[in-house]
Image 1 (cartoon, one colour):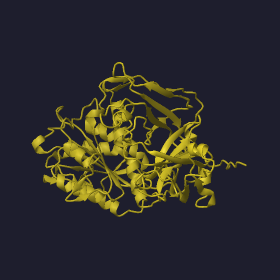
Image 2: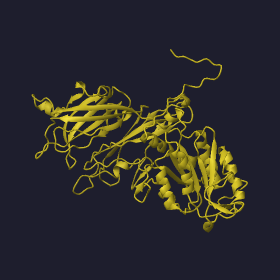
Image 3: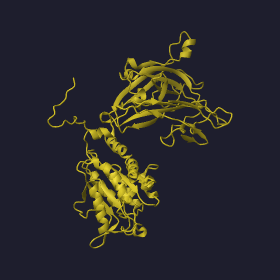
Image 4: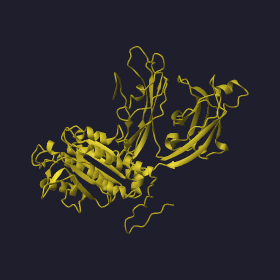
Length: 541
């Protein structure tokens, strides 16, 4: 149930669990469903122009899935931006979708406020994208004082014989012979992977008031377009109303395909299946941050300390470390992790360090698995004195030095920082992150304790890309989450850790892919399926 400001709408999607689906043999870990939203006869709330449905268009999905684009000056918007949902499977199951919703919008007594239409279609697992460019020739003149301002609108045909908008080109001003910019679109958005499915293209003359003039339309298919630039891809733009009225009418101009280039969108799993050492044999520095002396966590043996070692349950540091570590360790081939601490006085002379080995061996700070890291963490609490100030930049630079030596995509580095939020070298840390943003690495920050985490949110850079002295990070490499947001109220720590791990690792695949794609690094071919020793290879004929 979604609460729509002062309105309310109940909606239900039924997913029948039908069994017999084998996730081990599936090509991707989730089936994607595309949600399309359009509206009809919206109530006009603007005095001097038609409503811009920027509030209405996001009603169903704004809290979980984002929002559509804003379409100006229309009461009947068809939104291009889609909502892609993953249906995750845990056991054998098939999917059955029964979903078609068309409901009146309420809210103003005695007035019809319009209709919102929601369609759902399971997306084919096609991962091709296509780059296309079109031009027009001798299109109809629609403007009294000029020529035309033409643009194209592409529609995908659906299984129920309706059409769904999937792309709009830019407007080319004052010409009857436009050349539109090349654009890239996923093949599944264009035809849902069905190469023979009809693609309808409408040609319009743009008007400032939103009442765009229809020039004409034509139909094609992905298979036809794939022929590339040729006589087969010169299309007559036909306005059926004009054709019915005028016997000598031929067309309203032509649209020609200038280029057609197919690209395969590789995924995070393609690199995994290809055996690339994206996390394998890389250095995952699991860093434990301790509060400064001015905000001391106290003696770890005391219950008031964030590092309190209770005989009955893990402290927040240990839970965060275990939750994230147990997932990412499976992407490392030898499961040997360098574990560093910062903000402590070290024995025997009390030297303050911001980059010390938790296991006490600076020449070999590697620990065997997350269990080894946990053991080193506990031992360090018994041997070091927690002390400030708290500096992040040394450990960020530590990982960056390793990442800078392996830029070919053969390794990817993940730095996990567990912190109470106190940071003494914010300026230096921002510089370090900006420098690291061009390297094959990501930084995960988990905040523990009750403190405000404004500095960590700034480092995250989700809202505003991190910058320093006029320099901006090349890409977003930081993910921050406060652990307190994931603590289960019933005291179920396993559930708390599962929630934390899900969100804290959410951005890693995209961050990884952004590095690989900008460097043009392709995944290696997947190896042949494993055959147990002594068993013959099976051949399909």
